[in-house]
Length: 544
Ligand SMILES: O=C([O-])CC(=O)C(=O)O
Ligand SMILES: [Mg+2]
Image (tube, rainbow, N blue to C red; front, side, top):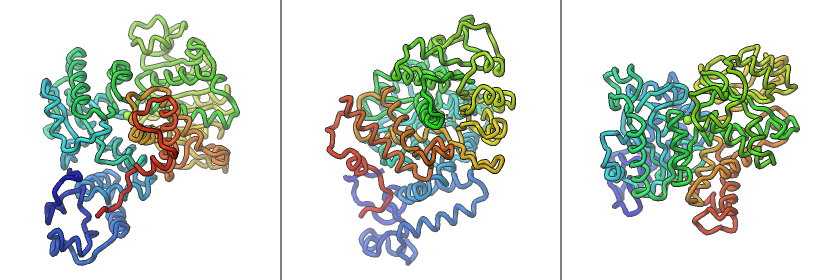
């Protein structure tokens, strides 16, 4: 991709450069100047007219997967137009370039593959990762979204097919947070895959081997992290959709060493916390009055539980008091002290209770006010579970967060129906409004896209050396504070997606302020932080 110092491209080379191409929007003068005359139809159009045509193309497509493929092609032809389309209607396009369509995209990634995007760093490149990173044409990389594909959404290990996720997450940095796209680099660490069906697929694009033992993986990741520090010293490493144990281990290892962030741990935790803060404003209760039960104790479950402990401590509880409020169950049952399979991060939450695999029984024992699902066990919040929560609580807080839809612990309709309209509900995906007993309910989408684009924009602007949990909690607070009382009145837990850019800029301003207050920024504090941030944001428009 070109930078300011790139010599002016001409003719077909200019039309084939997605970064500089304007297509039919090249003016007559530009067409003369750059050898484009005769290469374009006569009409000179503006960006809005071009967007209109794209909308028509998209309408004619039979599925969101086809729309995704079409939009990826558009990005390869004309980046400005691609982002203009996305930003013209985020509520419509986020579900296409991101969840839920991304689940289908990732499952078929090797089959629908068209052109390379981002970087693929494989185990075979050990010892040379630094040289390989230097092949990337841009040197101002500020965010790398990195996956191994080890746990993509609720799809398990899908190896390099997971590359759809870093691409999609980074699209949202721009579409929802206006972070300039040329500062973003999607990365797939190809470590092989445990998925034998994929390895047997002749079209599969990754290494056909099992992932290496842990020590080997650790040294590969270490070489990668070190190489990033040298080649892109300003870049934040955004870990996404690694196998749960890897996610927890590497965040712990690197969070106070390099600028990094784990979206599944910290982002999911922050958006859940934001939803809780809003739900508690509706209930007029405090966080310290709650008891939390989690189904799922992987990276998202533990990450959210850890962040709750931090938030409860900020509200005055001791660490032990905070931990006592939180109970977790996973596929092997309750996290309790006799279990021998727990990670250190999980052991801290182990209860002195007998073993149990019975969610309903656990609800009766613990009497939670908040039930959170991060288990990928579709349908596990049964009617009995929701009814028991509703027996214990006037307004039960029920967040089935697992993705994709078939992995969700219950649907919005089920939660409202089984709780007789009393549940305060958020899911990982956006459900349409639900009408129950003549009342309309607005299910929230507790998705980390309310957090990472805003946090990313704040980090882009302030250049801190590390991302701390406190900054992430500030992001949650900033989000919750943007749900106004009238919206809360209608049971809404999150701001509308249609305003996502405005929401992200407001959050980013708050987070940046916080970073300056903590003396964690490495740039000078401006007088008007919001205006300064707005000035740094990417605007999809053609430049001369
Ligand atoms: O990608 C999403 O929509 C949420 C997420 O991080 C995950 O499920 O891993
Ligand atoms: Mg994720």
